[in-house]
Length: 201
Picture 1 (cartoon, rainbow, N blue to C red):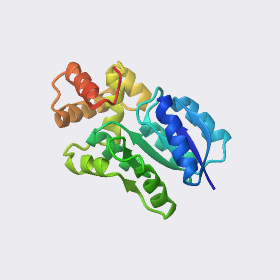
Picture 2 (cartoon, rainbow, N blue to C red):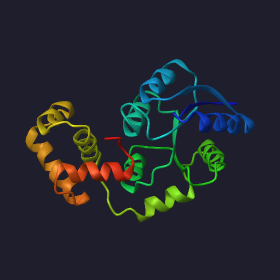
Picture 3 (spheres, rainbow, N blue to C red):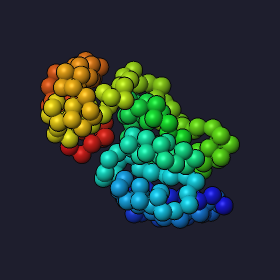
């Protein structure tokens, strides 16, 4: 029986998912409601799969993927999400996500996803796949990091320090980001972030 950590701050959905997973032969060994708590559990539990919502408190989904890839490469990460943000999904694919399951699709898509991963494949549920196909915006990893930090209130100088780059390099990333998203100001970037559902800012 494969072990799963389930991370979602919706308690009702969490209980339903736990029952579904256990009914289909997976052992839910722990649960979390933030990315910080999830990292602690990964370190302390014997786990094969992580089923996680994209939108929880903490450092965000891309950071989780990078962390697992570096320290726990044999652990698969599946995002179960209500978002429909194509450039976010593309970024998660670039970061090595094992599966994307939209909450718009049948909950049984999660079991299909886990089965596909067990066979060495990646899996995208129908709505997630459609969202990926329709997206024409693709941000680089650095542009996405700059986007997150801008939306969370950091200046160019602060972002440069956090990402260990020069302010001029961050300025170029910011110009590329604004051009791709057709954003003329920080207000535009904030609006795009809110509309995508990526951030609470």
